[in-house]
Amino acid sequence: MKILHTSDWHLGQKFLYNDREEEHRLALQWLVDTIYREQVEGLIVAGDIFDISNPPNYARRLYYNFLTALLKIPCKHIVITGGNHDSPTMLDAPKELLAALNVHVIGATTENIEDEIIEWRNEQGEIKAVIAAVPFLRDGDLRFSVAGESGYERVERIREGILRHYQTLGEIITENYKKLNIPIITTGHLYMKGALASEKQDNIYIGDKENMDAAKFPEVFDYVALGHIHRAQAFGKDQRVRYSGSLIPLSFSETKDDKSVYVLDFQGKKLDKIETIPVPTFRRLKTIEGSIKEVEAALERFDSKGGRELKPWVEVIVETDRIIPQLDVHLKEFTKDMNLELLKIRLKHN
Image (tube, rainbow, N blue to C red; front, side):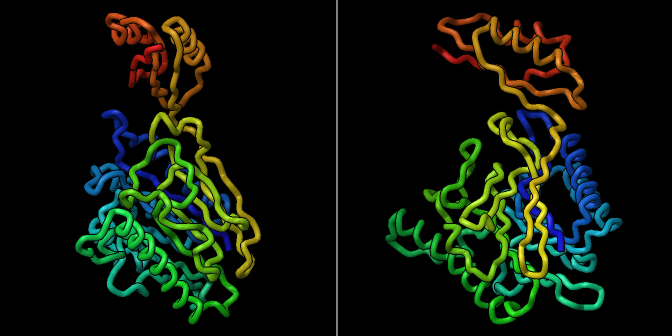
């Protein structure tokens, strides 16, 4: 069975007041084409589908158009979990309708943890895979407040709550499914111990960047599909715990990251192969740094390369030991005929 893992779409994101609609439309169409080309049977999206809890209408259209497109191709099973940027209410609103189309949405955890256990069945009713679809676990899902506890004690209680959640799911799944020769996968939207981010990302749980250790996930899970960190990376000796990273660069700090998705190839229960498929760059984000003369020369070189589908967005950092009057006016005039857009200009004092 082939399963694709992606996360952190952040549909509806504003990038310095510019929307990303065209980039996201191209990226989602590429994802549909990839799912079809690779003959993927199952899709997992591990949180942060949207960038804000009340996304613009165009972002919602992108989401539903993507799901509609999947109905026409061989991908028959879809699991979508909520991230810390998502509104559980908005994600969960159409879940009964989507479930009838084999699109299972878990926007937030419920009082019954077994609601997170999703069976993927074939047309004959046979179980082909089991997904423990864990969304972003909010503080209230994990703990009860304790009067007088310190910050460290609070962090420890949250960490213990996350671990307990996965242990409980692992025990239920072990009892009911472990004997089956099928993939058993869990998801998560959290900060892993040792995770490398391209920039400082919002820490989901205050004061703790080590929410979970890869070795602590129950062994019953053959793969752990994570979201939240925008850089693709793997953990543990067997590399079964992974962030897929964001679908497109979401800040200038991510321009050096290779964006990708993972395609998992299971032979029965055995994870036979993990293929990293790079996502094309639909709009180039570029940071140019140096003296004013070096920046001008670099802008000319960058523009001369051409051949870009969408106009690149550029950040300029001018290194100087003096004030440069009307620097932004000068650089905008300098680039007015170039096929790029200056979004950010700042000084770096030597």
